Amino acid sequence: MQREMKTLRTIANQAGTISDRLRLTVKVRFDLIETQDFVDGVPDLEFSYGNLRFSDESEPQVLPLIRCRNHLTLQGGGIQTTIRLNGPTAFTVTSSITECDWEEEVEEEEEEEFAALLRVA
Image (tube, rainbow, N blue to C red):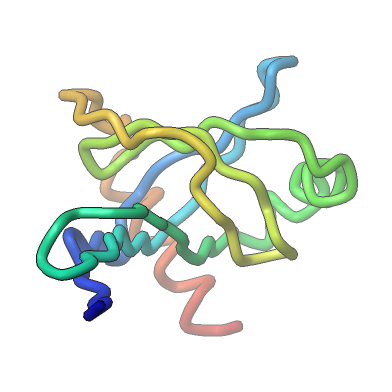
């Protein structure tokens, strides 16, 4: 039996949001890697994970999300899915990844500010 893991999709440095059921929404930048195992060439298990980056302004909102360990909705980069935080910046995808036309409404100024904050950190 030959097992091989292939990367199906990589999303890098995309603007998006994470939100909980109570409608707390936090702007993020994220990376996501979607993989799938193949056993003897036959598709098997899928596994997706990634990293988040927050601006310093978002930190007070993020701490309660990390502590509660609830499922969160990640939206951006043309996708929507449910995630669970594994720590302050890492997550695991816990549902299917849905393609969507949703675009994060982030103005250029906000994106530039966010990028500048990340460079300083």
